[in-house]
Length: 501
Picture 1 (cartoon, rainbow, N blue to C red):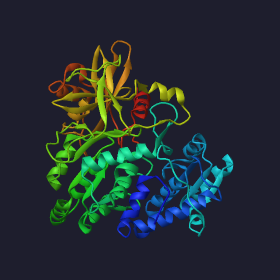
Picture 2 (picture 1 turned 90 degrees about the vertical axis):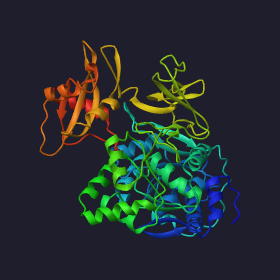
Picture 3 (picture 1 turned 60 degrees about the vertical axis):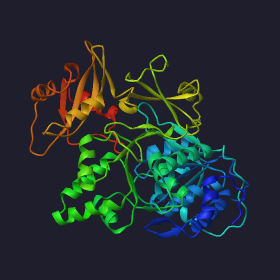
Picture 4 (picture 1 turned 135 degrees about the vertical axis):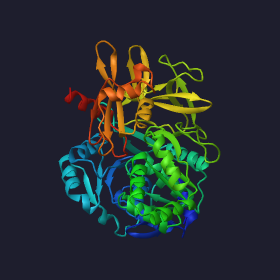
């Protein structure tokens, strides 16, 4: 199957031919079928044009083969893919479609109602997914790999979400770095349970698998019992998830009978790698998962703008509480507030440089310019290098608390608080204070049947933390506000503290 396209991902798929590519509720599909379906979709989207020329195509497809084929079809037609989230409310969907200035909106029948109305309001072309499968003749354009390929919207800690624009070359660099670092090969088989509008699910799992010629089984939604069952039934080699998913898997394991627990643990022996990311992994969760499965979860660090930048090793010692070292072809450094590199052992902001770093924030030239310093992207995350490994201290804006002249890591305090026998989960933030600048506040989810007063917490905390790190305010909550990847949204948490004064 000759092609004039220059998208390396597509060209590689031609080599994999009849190998299984996607397994989902729709069935099992090979690489040849993925190429054929995506070509048909691309030609339908073109609607007689020679090239979409970077028109934005916003889409909401079911999790499975159709999602992958649609994403590829957009790329093959010369468009920019704008994935939408299943859980997004109508107002957010309308913002994302409008902000990206999408000219086409594609929707699976399940989401047709709300997306058709948005497309009508914005006066853009609406295409139900079932209309993409009719035979259309024609040829696809040649794609310059330097073209824009995708816009992923960041959750944003303040204001509206920003569109992160990546080129085909950016995506290729992100994927090949992980292929090298994590040893992806064509016999690999990964189970996909992550959202498909985030870099973790799109790049780390789906695109890496398809680049390698591996199998990717996509579940319609994450369910801990079903996921464990897949672990038992399938010859899986890889699994990647966020900490909250591992917590739910552990809870499901604990609810099983002793015989079932043994079978579930044994099923994990066939995996060669299990990865955790997108949020800080509590040490207690890592330890429990290792006790159940024998696997030390590989922790890594990345973000929408850069893909992955740091990782613990595939082979070798994985240092608990750290995210390892720079990935292949990625440059990483720490700088102070003046932009000067810091010495080892001194905390600083993470800056990243390399071909995996995004092109721009969509239609936000000033914010794009402000995010770079002399070619280095400023992540806004604070870390320290300890014995060669990076340890994340938190977000510059939300996880670094300035109290009484001290800089305190909220993540460090959270890790200590989780070791309290009455605390099931927690989140720590800085609360504005006239005298101290900020005070340390903790939101606590308690173990069932347990009580804990602030006084008791402080007495316990002073034996384990410096006095200025011990929370001076604590609230007990039933749950913590989180984004779709399970990361605590601390802006929402600050509002909760204000309501409980």
